Structure formats: structure tokens, C-alpha cells
Length: 432
Image (cartoon, rainbow, N blue to C red; front, top):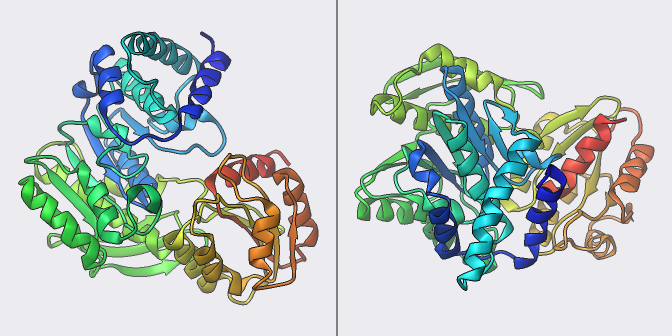
């Protein structure tokens, strides 16, 4: 199987939908020899920020001299982004070889009467297999959806589990309250282990503390009270903070927004646990500082163009929209803002619009390349409650040209609403 055939095979499994449960993954991994059991894994769940946290941890470990796998989703521009080693996408050959191996086992599963695995289950299996082949020292694995029944949760003994900010998202699958969603995310907490939790409201934390107690897992809350931001602009942030009495001075990150400082501190609490527990030895203060400075997380308040200033952001739920709105209010309050928006229909569109729309002067709506998209016309009708200055342009490429046409000198253009859309926007802008 070559690269193109492998991708066709992966994407054809999309028809099996989204299926929470571990039976199919467990059988597939068993047939592959359970490569995940041979890996040292940091496991990260959450609604918002888990990708950034994964990236901070992976880069610090890499700067400490280790070979590090990073598994995240979805991808922005090329599929290979989902499985990375030391910051580099895996090769086309990796994909062709791993899919060939996985398909052999899936054919055997189907012959034995099992359901065909979903796309995410296949990609998860590929990641474990590739990381075993490449003998990574550590693998940082991001949960796809939820936690308890996510296919990544066949991990038995993570070095540490991390739970990022929790908010309402995927409510039809995970539950309609913060407590119910926290219960699902908390499913990654394993017996006699440790969990680092992004400091948040009692509704989520009470549930997570209860699960940790039941599993005899050390509960570590990332304390944000010591954070002192000394400089922040659209290029970087510099801050001080402390963990367990140890002070960190002049820590600099390139990711923008108050939430990214908190994500960084959460990641560094996980690093601190790994260091003090002796699970990972060679992490120095210098490698921590270098790692967080070099961390990139494309598509999250990312400036991709000047003239006009063009920012892409994956804000697609209430928490993400609030984080983006804070950035806009802080850095661009005196500028005219133009929005290019595309969303999936199963998101809380009305809440996102309520948060974002008051600051935008002009809007162009479009459609992400995803079967769950809301049509441009339907989204336009929702936005007309806020402004009459809105246009619907179905194709992303055409919508991008239109938004650049209507942006005047000094305007700031924001493309947001769906990671499935902003990846294409990013590619189009880079190719201009």
C-alpha cells in the first residue's frame, strides 16, 4: 500500500462514524502485539488547551535530549501532522507501512465478527505502532474525545495524566453538564498514578478529585495564583510563577492569550511531577525554559499575515470563543475587526456568536470541509441578528478572497470557528 492508498483507506473508515468504547481498539491492539504497553506515555485530556499542553510537554522533553512522540488531532494542513517525532511530521512511508499493518489486523477482526474500527481508532493504532518502531523515549498522547471511552484510553500505566480546561462541548456524547463531562475526562486517571489538573471551577474539580481518590492517584492542581505576567503582546508573553516553592523567572512563550500562560503552567506542573518523582531524570531548568520558548501550536491565535493583520484561531466552543474575545479586547480594541467564520452544526453556535459578534464590523461566513458543517446561508441568518454587514460565500477559497477584498488598511482579519476550516485558510495564505 502506498501513501495515497493508505490515506484513502483511513478516510474511508470515516463512514463508521464516531464510536465511544474500547472493545474494538483493544482487539486491534492485541492483534498488533499491544505496542502501547511498551511505551512511556503522558496522557492528556480536556475540552480546551490539551493540544497546547501536549506541545509544551513534548518540546521540554525534546530539549532535555529525549526522542519524543506527539499525537494530536485534528490536523490543520497535512495528515502527517497528527503523529510527530521531535517536532517533525512522520513520513509518507511511515503512514503507508503502518496502515498496511493495521489493515491486515482489521481484516482479521472483521473475519472474526468484530465491527470495523473507526478512523480515530485506526490512527491511534498507527501512532502506537510507529512510536514503537521508532523507539521513542516518551510519547505525549492527546485524547480525541472525552477520555473514559476514547481509544487512547487503552493506556494502562501513564507516567502522568493531565486534564486541561473543561467546558461544555460534545454534549450529546459526553453529557450536558460540566460534572458529567468531567467524569468522562477523568476516565484517564489510572490506579496508583498521578493526575495534574488545570485549575478550574469546583463543579469539574470535585468530580476529578473523587475519581483520583478512588484510584489512589495523586491529585495535583496547577496553581495559577503565583503567575505574574510581566510582558504580553501579539508576539510573546513573559511571566514569573512558582511550583511547590520553586520560583521560575522570566519564562517566555510565543503562544498568545492569558489561557496559554495557564496551559504552560499546567504543562510545567506535569514536568515538575515527572522530575521530582524520578520518572524522568534529565530535565534541567534550562531545558524547561528553552522548551516552552520554542513551543508552537499552529491555528491558535496565530498571526499568519501582515497587511492586513490576519489571525487564525480554532475557537469553536464557548470556552474557545471567550479566550479569543479576551485577546481581541486586549490587543485590538482600537482596530476595526473583520471576521471569516465557518462552523460545524453540532457546536453551540449561538453562544459562540453571542460572545464574538459584538466586536466585529464585517463578517464573511463560509463552510468547513466536513460533513457536519452548517451551511453558509444558515450561519448568515443567525449572524443577521447582530449585524446586516454579513455575506455568505460557500467555498473557503472564495470566502478568503472576499474577506481580503473588504478589509481596509489598518483592519484586523480573524478566521475562526472550526479547525477543519482554518487549516485550509492557513495553507491558502502561505501559498499566496
